[in-house]
Length: 335
Image (cartoon, rainbow, N blue to C red; front, top):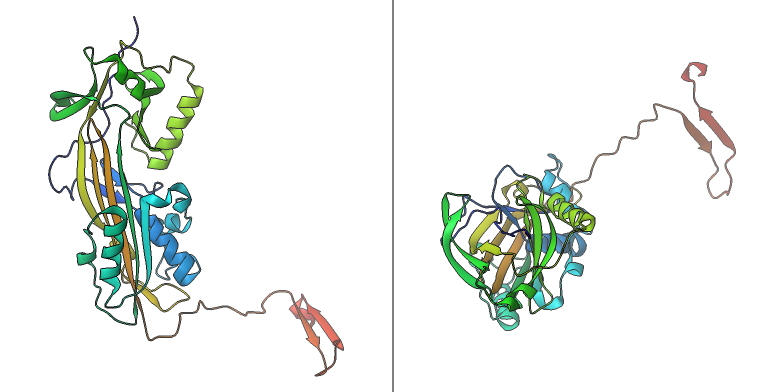
């Protein structure tokens, strides 16, 4: 008898308006966290990329030490190359009296959206303040609208509303699911097909690893799998509705002067709204940094010109091409 495929995604189901304390927003896919429920969206990385590439033209470094998040963000492992142009909007420049209006008007025109973030930023017009902003917006439908399966338990104790494919579902729904692998009832993955270019991967795995590790692990298992990758009429799909609305202030980045510049990060914020149900997915994420310039000269990293090991001395007359004396010093006891 063929296996019964049951999908239970390892996220707590959140149907409340805000869940700031329960779900942690991470700056990169490589970020590690002890929080069980966590989310990453590339909007903050887009902001960081523009700050490096358009404002300071170097990786960010702090004299007081480098948070792991900065090390990972500096790698720029996610960029606009991973997105279609229609799915994001970016802005970088001095904060003027028109800045807020310009951004709000632009996202309204492109996405028919309003901002959840702009009112949280200090956008008082001033010549010494820079803003770098990004919005990432996705709204797509599954290739078939899945059945609503009603309420049941997640992790055998948490009530949730589910959608998917049951024994009574129309066979046409099967074509909306692609099996990546099925190693056991606790280790499997599928892809849900959409009407657009977006793909939804669901991987059941309880390992508390970083997102980049889990994604690579899923692809590795898919490549190794030699079983049936067709979703059959005896298979079943069960996925909880997911809805989150979270925000994060990256406090480890703020109030610190960037080495080699006169910039201090004033604010670093990100918001995430995600909604997945039987019809499809809606995602809206904003990120922004405001950066102040100081009146101090750019901080210069000290260089140690210590001739305390082997070195060479040359003597040359002014305006002449070649030196007339050369000395290599290796054993100071000879002098």
